Length: 114
Image (tube, rainbow, N blue to C red; front, top):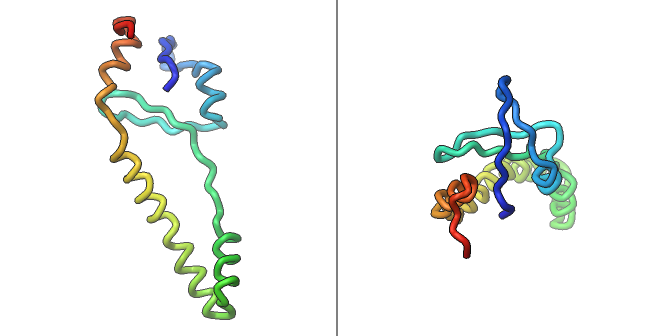
């Protein structure tokens, strides 16, 4: 994780994302903003990936064709979002929040030297 940076908030509640963070996260035109455990989390909006071509290629290689191909394609495509949601939920289970206080101590200039 990069070193925290203190940034100003304008009278219109606007902030400027440091260039280093902007480039590292490959931020585009929009971000998602959310409060998590008392912290403001800003994440880049990820472009939606279309897996259709990959699904169709696999189905054709598996020998599907005609109406059966269409049914199986529709079924597998409907499984993508739940599978991605499950992967995200599982990855969140592995995040260690014990360093949150350390992060804010460092942000406030109170971090201990290692």
